[in-house]
Image 1 (tube, rainbow, N blue to C red):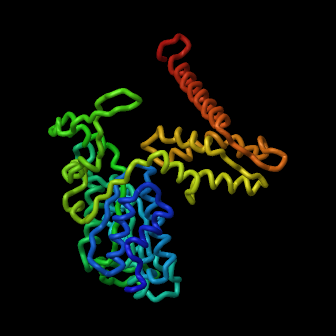
Image 2 (cartoon, rainbow, N blue to C red; image 1 turned 180 degrees about the horizontal axis):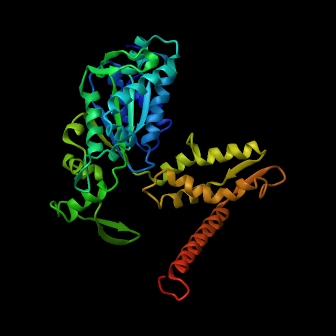
Image 3 (cartoon, rainbow, N blue to C red; image 1 turned 60 degrees about the vertical axis):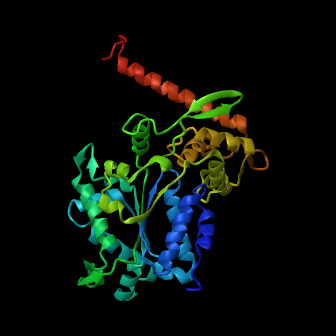
Length: 380
């Protein structure tokens, strides 16, 4: 037990990769520390917009577990899309498929010659990350979703039961065994599109109208009132029930963690320092062509400011905006580089690329409008 990391140590390791999500990192660190100590602990539900860092957090956990020999038993991490569970639920196999994937993942880690008993023990101590769990809603458009209900029930079976009947795959012998699933840790994540709007409507125009009071804001010498709404402050369990998460399913999560929208300073850090950042990937590409790519601080901030205008995309907007700036140079790597092989991107370069992109977008819209209208100006 002395070799196990503390929550502070886990958080420090995760924060090297995860930016701007301190609460999510803390919750994950505590849950993981409890699980590593073989304590009974509930699971984690992450709610956050696309690009806010849900998958990045899980990758950081996976790296942490893989890097520490003392955590080897816990190092089997399975990532599965909730839609896959929904599809398998339609044929009644999601629980068995999930256990099979865990077993196969353990086999990849430990080797094909590892005894089946050891593989089962490794798999039973693993972590399951279910992405886009909001896609397995029990109700969609007010109507029951059979696939979503079955998928939630299948996960409940693994989360609740300590003894799960399971038929081993053929490569493992094919016999029926009982798997103790009480040591598994489930982390489910989703963007929950529409949840923000529905809760905002409830507290501003719906049944709780008036509970959200405007606050006075002074900005550039002007005084105004505005509603400052945070989903974290106003969401209730009933909002998730209405969304299609069943009470039985939600009750199996000890922590419901809201990921914060990424501020500009967080986006800038991700863009300049992130392990998977588009900038680093592009720099590696240019280096392979014998060219050094550099961005001025002002150019980087201009890209980040443009990306921040798409808050629903989070960090993913960085790749989209940077791609507009760099794609011409990537096609002709030496175009724009000086005699010493340096390609420097400054703010005017960014502005020209973004302006060109907007003109092309306007042109495409105009062209689509002309085609739709027909030669006489009226819809054809």
